[in-house]
Amino acid sequence: PSNENYIVLTAAALEGSTLQRAYVRHAPGAAAGFDYRYDARFGPGEAPVFFSRKGEHMLMVKAISEVTEDLVIPFVFEKNHEGPEFKIALQQTIPHTDLYLIDLQEGKEHPLTADNPYVFTSATGDDPDRFELHFRNVTVDTPTIPGTESLDVHAWVYDNTLYLDSHEQLNHIALFDMQGRQLRTFRPQQGRQSYALDLPAGVYVLRMGSRNEIQSLKIVIQ
Image (cartoon, rainbow, N blue to C red; front, side):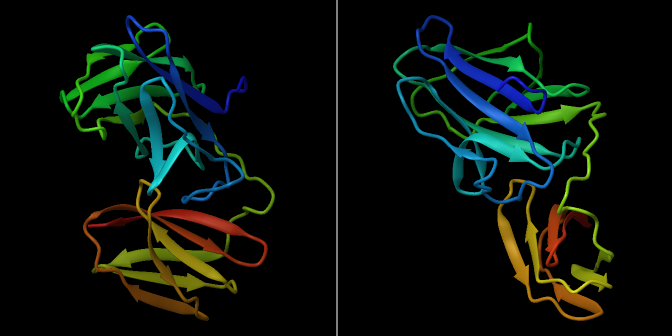
């Protein structure tokens, strides 16, 4: 991809001949779960295993609907027959945002730029859920696109209960975690609604839809 809506990462051995690319695509309106319009599944080859996730889906291309400093993108890495030294490099990024790679195994935070790849060692048997991509200093605008205009819905959480005050006729309501896993679905009702959540403290994404419009909101459980 060559347009500015993509982040392109590569993983390769320092002394090797194979390379694996992974993509993050900024696509306003993309679903929190797997979205066949924008996501693409990962298929292993001879290169190091390197992909992101949406729930249980292994993705070569992961679509995100918005770029925020709260967003965390997990990446899986497993060495191939090459190594033991590897690097993750940034080939392309979204303008007006800084990227940080977190190495959970080493407890390191690395500013990832085109001229500053992350170099690390990897051994067979390492935990593959090793990396996270974070965003800093975000000034990316998320434009409104047809079919995703805001709904006339107010949502809030109190005492681990979700409250909705809707002036729209909703046809679906779903709750996702920040990794894109769908946690709950709710049957829409007229007027004010409440749903017990029983979830741990954290940030979640509430996705609601009517016949013609879709809206995603972040909610915080304290």
